[in-house]
Length: 539
Image: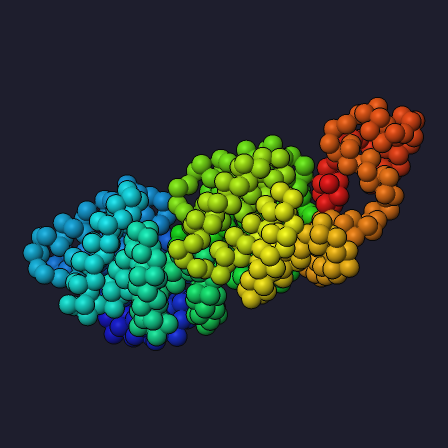
């Protein structure tokens, strides 16, 4: 093609890029890949990245490295190839490209901004190695270089990494302020598209890990607006949808949350959202579990595990709902043993309390609750404080101290209400009802339990609804009070002879009750009846 025509195509592609029309930009530049100069190749690389065309991205930048061979810009292109490969899980190739970038900078011998970019892999390596202070120092050095050269992309990336390092050092507020400063540049549109997406997604991930619900909601809404303005874009959209799904689930919009998780799974092929497919599957599993769809939850958690994610605490809670208490306890203990990070442990410990109490291991429940309190104490995060209050109330109620449980559970209810978390509010109200009953206030107990039942019904949380109905003395499956009592003993593993002796009935009468239970539950074995009892929250 004539040189003038190529230049016109590059100029048109630049205009398309400015409006987020990545498909148009790619269609203009891809056929000309062999004729593009270094600037045109970088534009092609960006369009390919945003469309999820990873191999084209790397190939275009390889061409740009050759075209820039006599300038420091070649090192910048080599750095981006290395970072892309690292995100794709190819550390050897990534290291090779980072090394080439370093050699190119040293060969030119100039004081250039690319030296700052090459500090970023060092930051990440030191973080992985547990050298948080070294990571903080390397990020600070990159910030100095970014400010000296006025490079907004490098400044945002370095601030962002410094924020993560400081959070890991326990300087949480300092770290979050660094991330917020980087996000100011993101939201102001001061950064290149790839850096914008990387910082958005990593910042929101950090907010979720650190239980910063307010920040997570704010940045997720901003990311959603950015993604929606670029309908061609594939990169970053999967992770955006996962975050939206999680927040929708918290706020009780389970149908919408499921739809976003399923959309995320379809869009999660790009390396910048490598974990999005696993996280999307986990979100699907969570909604299925809460609705009582144990088979659907099992399948979703399995997909999450195959995609490289630890499907906990959801899988452990599913085992508990299935009546497999020992398996639940083993699963949550293994998940806790797999991480020392306090914030990640804080996401597992509420389930550990619940499972330990179900297993009759009061000491383990108290230890998990105490650790959760210790993690939450320095931070004063509303989400963590709500979890602590709920865990303390659950523990007190199980220990027979209904008065203490009442205070903690009312605190939990108010905190969950402030977070607009209707399912968690309903769980707190259910336990409040049981605490009121234990204190002899049957009227208040009925009020709280019925409110919880109604909320569970609105949400579609069938097992919780049926458990609340049972606590109210209602018959959710047509079982008589005596049949419910027999079913619970069947679920405990008692034989008909043992049940007859315990309930002062004839063994023939117990046989008849068991037959009626099987008929009403639509099952034919004691194991199936036990599973159905746990599934429906009757045990």
